[in-house]
Length: 119
Image (cartoon, rainbow, N blue to C red):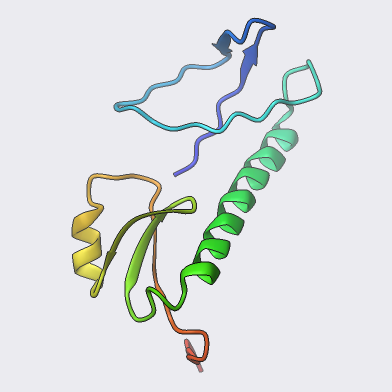
């Protein structure tokens, strides 16, 4: 799950969080520097969250396109555009990533495969 926390960064690179941040283990972060010195309004925050999510989704899709044939028929687990696990079945891959968060799991199909999911 992505979390957005408002912070200020001074000219020396010191980061000061403007709201409480509680984490239970080491986490990666992407920092987006804003042009505006004023605190973000709620709508700006939502737009920034969407931009981060869209970037992550784009990188995941690009990884899937580039690696489709290699992992066709398998489940893959991605952290952004980084492969963290692959397996033949969903239970196997879920077991492999059970202690990780923010993982995208998907079954990879060969390019010529037609997938039907409905009517």
